[in-house]
Image 1 (cartoon, rainbow, N blue to C red):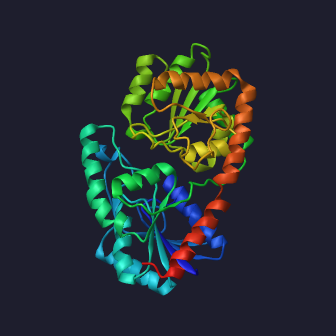
Image 2 (cartoon, rainbow, N blue to C red):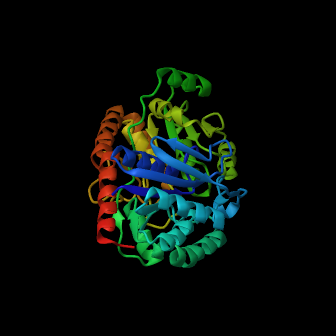
Image 3 (cartoon, one colour):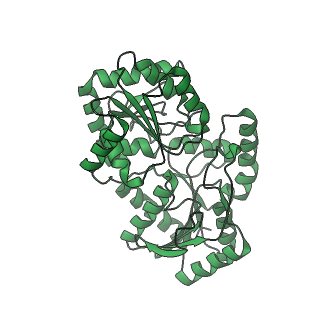
Length: 405
């Protein structure tokens, strides 16, 4: 395997879980001697059209940036890049670079459709990673999106891929149920070791948000319908009876007003802090200053609760994590309740379960420390980039050697 192309609507300087994942994979492949060219829409006009980033040749394509749309959970980086000129340009560049395989990230954006067209034009295999499932809190919007997912995206994108990669078993179940595709490869979502937290950054953040001497529950991830934090806020509010000086820090873009309205209704505006979007380089400091971390997707079907990048990063920082995660999400026995994570039942009073988890960790510091250590060991063993890159390269090589298209 000499050369591959990575296609993604989300790529640095955008800071999302998907952009971090695919850009890190690209850089790690370069370290293994693979030539990688990446294509992404130029939604950030300050980013160069062409550059080498961590050894990866990156092309940012002209695009139409769309406004925030409620049906798309007000996602700020929607764009349209599928134009004849962009497709021809990508085709020519891939031919010049001798690309043997394309890897597209996310099935719901138009880069996946670009990949399908280029697959036919170039007669090379297309690997597709399903990063997340399509769902919406609004029943009408959910019905519309689910219908599009099960028809257009299924027939025009997913079923035309040479091979599918699942980042967890929730994606596996989603792939089979929504798209009728039984064959795929599970490569759990990896996370790299973060840079050590700067002590100056930790001190500055504690001072900025008034966290010194207080218990801190951290929740990293953009605030929107699917990551609405409503249950987390209510459970945290209940825990304030035992820890009145505690703080809940929600880090990420703010696109869901009801969460802020709930905080005001509960009278905990001082205890719940919405920081908005923060620089990526500050993330280690945010994780360092917290006592526990939790973030999950709300409004998902039973069995579709993944752990997510932010929680895994917290685990790498040896922080205890809790949420309604599916126990076998990364395979049997990887997540163990009470040992390396606290698993909330998928049914029952979620608010009470959140409160119970918070108090369990804060009242038993020895348990929290031990759980953080075990969480770190789990990520190193099962969710590291070394493991993920090895499995990606094995998959790519197998597809190329078999001549699959």
